[in-house]
Amino acid sequence: MKALFEVLAPGEQDYELAQAIDPERLPAHIAIIMDGNGRWAKLRNLPRVAGHRAGIQPVRATVETCARLGVRALTLYAFSIENWKRPRAEVETLWRLLRLYLRSELPEMIRHGIRFTAIGRLDALPDFVRAELHADMHKTAPNRGLNVNLAINYGGRAELLDAVKLLVEGARGRDVEIDEAAIAARLYTAGMPDPDLLIRTSGEMRVSNFLLWQIAYAELYLTETLWPDFSRAELLRAILDYQKRDRRYGGLGKPTPVPVRDALIEAVSVPTR
Image (cartoon, rainbow, N blue to C red; front, top):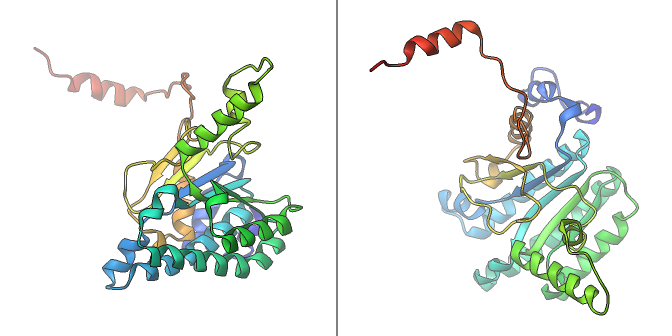
């Protein structure tokens, strides 16, 4: 976390929030559903594409903060399989913005030792988009810092379907043990830790077909903040909230002792019949 304090100043809100974070209990993998670009633009009487443009800066800030914190993986939900239903002009603008982002951020990714990867059905993307994605993946492949994972033309059900198809193909003519490990090894995220923390912006209360297998035990952080307004402070608050959780994975955590005074107050407060 030392790298984060290099860009923070005492007295700032971000500095105070960062000081409260336990560096030994950082989430290894943070996943984010970046939602609310369109609503952000509508509130300002702007076209939807203005919201997408405004959403680039929070991506930049989130990637840098996670890299400086020492988070191992960050997965950003950029474009779902269902998003092809949007107006063609909006989709084409998204591709142009993605190309702009990848080209402008490549030097920063290399400087911070960030490894860039993309998951989803990439073969269905326009040729120039695939070329940009593969170029950045190739140039950052040697890096060993934060893994920024862009989910694009992605769907959780599609990922599971693709994993099962690979499993069936591999099982032809030989015995293959089908268990959780076999499926996990064939997911787009094979080799990465499952997300510890899932953040969703814009106040929506659903996971939207995102990393359905991987988020089985993820802690959820929901915020009313629209994605273009998502700041480093909001990310730090999400991590602090995560660190307060008791992660039991279906088991029993350590019982929290109840102070004697509180127990007595509770006892005398129970109505009698």
